[in-house]
Length: 187
Image (cartoon, rainbow, N blue to C red):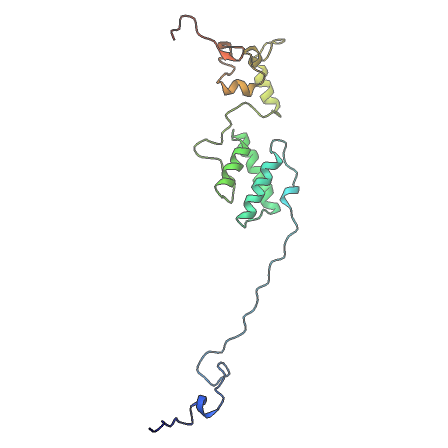
């Protein structure tokens, strides 16, 4: 049997070195080195060190900062200022800032938005640091020297009264923290 002869032009057999691609000997385009993109310099800003309003708990704010960091959208100085202003606006509209933050962090939102269905509205009385207008409106329901309406109904705090749907308009229907039965009402 005869062994086939290979042409000497074949670089594998002839020992010739094949041309290196990209050196101009082939029709392939010349590849330019890829430039590394410069990383943006990190700004030394910690949103946890911002002075918070008294009505916003620090642990709630820390939860919001962690939530933003987890979705790789860290807070900047400008965004912190604007979001605190938004929370103040939502609070003045009757929304609970803590519920707004919990809802937005839980849903993975980038921003803070009150719920359209009203689930972030405050269901209970005013914050402990109520404004002068809030204290004045509460004082309008009681005569001078009279106990506050929730104490007359037998509650320790207006929030505990609100939990049983006791309010300044119906507090006389409650005694010792419980609704009293109406006379003549059948059970």
